Length: 206
Ligand code: PRP
Image (cartoon, rainbow, N blue to C red; front, side, top):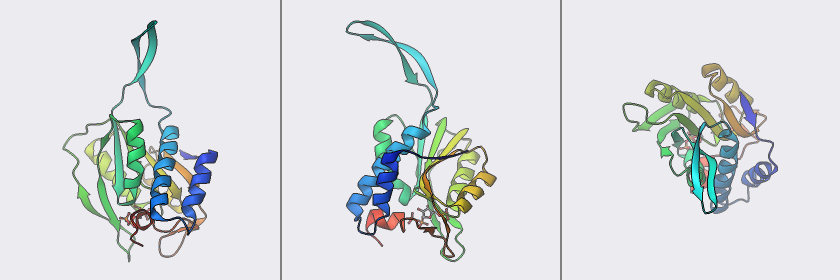
């Protein structure tokens, strides 16, 4: 399943992120905000259990999140998506996965993974702003499934039709939540029109 956000705030903020004139500080603010909005949509089906709480006026029926959530940012660019989401779900665990794309082959190369032996969360949100070839997302979901993760969702900002098709083919059970599907992947693996390199634009390294 692919969920492309229709939310005006998401579209507005994403447009600002694309703009060449947007500097890293503003870019980091925007990625944080868009990630929170996407997360709101992506977590609409989280399970809750019924509880009762005492208010100053009596007893109220309420709900408690009953699933342990893991945020899985793909380094580096996924880092900027963590903080806002984590603020909304302070009980979430954050597990970083380090992957970079080999510039020649565009294949993901793993360089950081400190997942414990057994899964500690029930729902994993894979965070990466860019789904280009889909290779990094596929490799991350492979890692999480080998770990034993049961429910995995991908949350990103921009995707190509090629990246979506690849992720869906490799992992049809993983819903894809995205701010916008762009035109295509170019011959050096960039999303067009895209926003450039999301890592460089956050960290000022471009
Ligand atoms: C970029 C981006 C994704 C990946 C997407 O990372 O942040 O992680 O490429 O491409 P794919 O769908 O073709 O795998 P990059 O390798 O530039 O590393 P960085 O985030 O550390 O800059």
